Image 1 (cartoon, rainbow, N blue to C red):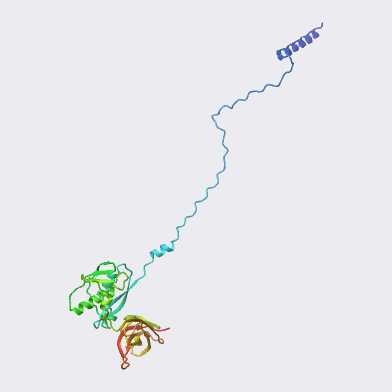
Image 2 (spheres, rainbow, N blue to C red; image 1 turned 180 degrees about the vertical axis):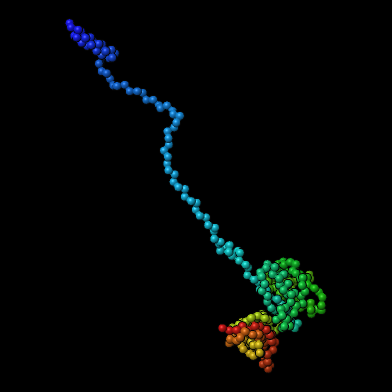
Length: 300
């Protein structure tokens, strides 16, 4: 055999041997499925996987906070309280006559009234003969169950002391918290105990020195013949510029309220007088006249 044939034979034998060794003892001759590597867990890494960056949304600006507007209740709470108007009873020709004062509001109205009463009349009021008999320093010590208690000076004659007490009683009992007044520890008294100290005609409005215009409303109480109350208005020269009359709510022998409205043509501003009177049943004369000096305002 030639050398080339020998080499070819050796190669064939070697290939057959390799083929038989790779198959092992398998009888089927089937190579089977290709082996796969068992699953393995990934070894932990000291460098974690990078987290994708998410672009942050812009933060909105904080809402604008505006101070709250003051409420109506708050505004009302800071509003100044309305002034208070009090009635004062002075003495004129031995009788009681009223006037008014308007002052800043106060809770101590009885103290304010007695202070104003002791201060005395204004110049316009004094010109009509008004005066006061109450000295300064008199105060209410307490008000219990509608009874105001206080002490007043006891100097002077009985008439003076009674007029002084009447001033206090008529002034204090205008307030709803005071129905009676206890003076110097005596039994409580009220307005009816001094009703005889009122003149036949009492004028509560207008008051001396007041600036008035037309139409003018004249008010008060009266006990006059047939309950008829007459009014006239005089200018600075004493000329009659208006007249009128009305009827009180009660006639002769009892006291009733009245309200008379009078008007006049426009006049220049000047001093004037309001007269309230009773017409005599005997001769028609003006009697029981009450005069009130006023300022007549000019008309439009």
